[in-house]
Amino acid sequence: MELCYQLPVLPLDRPVPKHVLSRRGAISFSSSSSLFGAPDPRQLSQRRGAISYDSSDQTALYIRMLGDVRVRSQVGFEPERRGSHPYLGVDFRTLHSRAESAGTIPARRIRRLFSFQRHLLSSRLLRGAPHLNPLHILDEDYCGQAKCMLEKVGSWNFDIFLFDRLTNGNSLVFLTFNLLNQYGLIELFQLDMVKLRRFLVLVQEDYHNQNPYHNAVHAADVTQAMHCYLREPKLAQSLTSFDILLGLLAAATHDLDHPGVNQPFLIKTNHYLAALYRNTSVLENHHWRSAVGLLRETELFSNLPAEDSLSIERQLGSLILATDISRQNEYLSRFRTHLDENDLCLGNASHRHFVLQMALKCADICNPCRPWELSKQWSEKVTDEFFHQGDIEKKYKLEISPLCDSEANTIASVQIGFMTYVVEPLFAEWARFSDTRLSQTMLGHLGLNKASWSAMEPEASGSSEEGESEPGRATDEPSSRVLSQGSQES
Image (cartoon, rainbow, N blue to C red; front, side):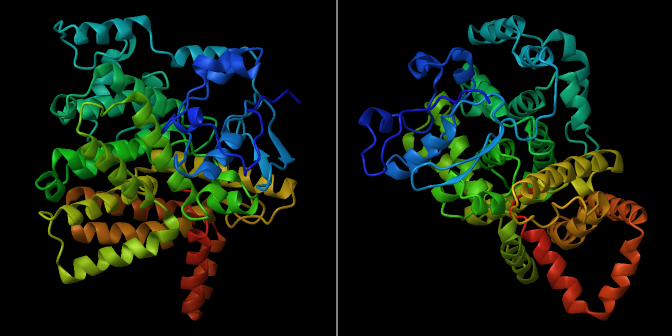
């Protein structure tokens, strides 16, 4: 086991130093890494931004510092106790890592760095020099192919896996930047190009790409889906530029710093995040606070009035918190009521915000509505993440979370249940709200994908026949099992 470095431990009853509390939003260790005694300061510089805390809550800050400041390379999973908040110490950065040769890691990091050429092009833009290529942060090596794909970024068949390969693993940065530019938001909100680029890079870096599912590619996929929904006639005619900015930012950051395990896992291991957010929407609160931390660290909206910047942060939180799948029925019932009473008025700011929440919820779990070639890949990735959590729970003799037991579940059974009890009800109501070609296409793919998984699960037909004789059991139990996953798939 390699050494771990951490801040000096302070008792919970001792005030946190004022110089620490003055660092609002996000704390960067790259400039003071020598204070930690690490043999390689670059290890510490990898932990940027996203320290979630309320500056008035010293205990919360202390818990967060204990959990997030630690630097681990290959430590993995170890039981430990910290003060009055014991939890199983999981290094989420290596939780889903697979065995790799030592030489591949530096190469992967190098490929993800922005090249000098890209920096030079963006610098020319800042000096006012004209440019012919609107994607001035793309390398010329990838510009032709990536640009060709981005011309069809509004297509529901958009292959985010191919786009990620073409952009050398930077799909989230390039796609989000392109959409902000396409909607004219960079010019309208006078966003500083250097700050915007730094923000997007930090967002991408704060996703754990070792996670099979909850990684930067998933965030890019959700952002692309959100773009498709924003172009739907009802939304395109009513949303303001402010709404569109919020929608794209929320999609890009909605799973920021996701640990690759679900909320019940964090709660039952007494993790510091569960203590920090009092077991309520733990992951979603963390994603939101992490996004706010990066916004403040990069000062992306420093040119806006303070009240506008705070409004963006609050509404961003409202959108991200809506992705908590344990509250699925709450949002779905409210949406259904609005549609039944036909009282959604998109001229009303609160109604527009609610529709944005529903759009983000749809984008977050739209994988079953994609073409089979894409949907199948996502299904395999999310189930891999489920089963890996189940293996950890078995290893440490914890109660195995629903759908995470690889011996009791298959990819097909997990997906059939998820489609039946979560995806179908949501997208049926979305189609009532926006009855367009896209909505019918999504429902069509959903039906075909469900049939494909059913064909791989011979017992599915038998279990459905038994369910018909006990409707209460068929409806309630599977639904509760799927929703009890917290925000695992979302």
